[in-house]
Length: 289
Picture 1 (cartoon, rainbow, N blue to C red):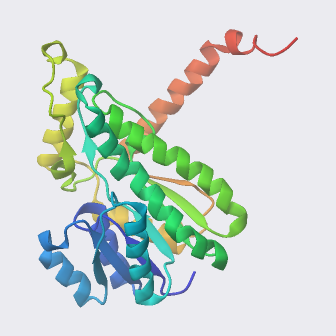
Picture 2 (tube, rainbow, N blue to C red):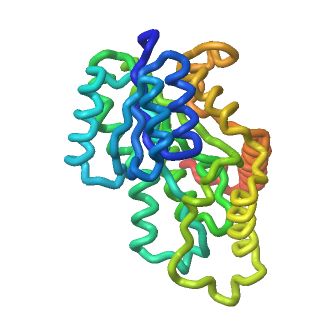
């Protein structure tokens, strides 16, 4: 990777995207920041541009021909893209049966198909150079699925599976794939939480589904998240750049962030191990004699 690589980052209007763009610029990298509506964040656009970055309008849900034009325009700025960060996302929370097909498809389009299409567009040039990094910003929701998050988790599980397979495809071709899995961080992500148009049925009132929905929305709005966005984005930057405490960690596909995340990883792993042990007499009996 060049000493001053070119970063293309989606979802830069807030949270991880914004913080990572500023860290990369202040560290001497070239940054093409993008968002769906740059006019909504004029001060942030000005700050990025004052540091030498550029800001482009990009809606990850656009048809692939439009995205191809956007990527071509972005590539023409510096003649290359070394790091793609797929950060644009939102969460659809609600009992599964209240979620319409339209709402479900919109969730998958932003959180999965958008990153997939952008990855496909930048990959050929990276592969030809045998150099480049694809950063997929996933979530703990891509590891453990809690109540009220069926479609959000589905989108992140899809991103995880796609990226894990791509990681193995790209290993011999010199392109790196990194899955970033933040836990609970103090961003304004609550503003990007959507609820289904259909009301929650009475039977769900007081259940884990309603409690989880309320905890996520209220916790984020109240700023009660334990994670520090700046620290997390500095770690992401260091891992991509292979420097500091992250030097030598490029072998890892996944980058979990936050102590709360580690706790949920352990719960998931323990559950899988318990299932494997508890069902051994069944799965061990299914091979041919």
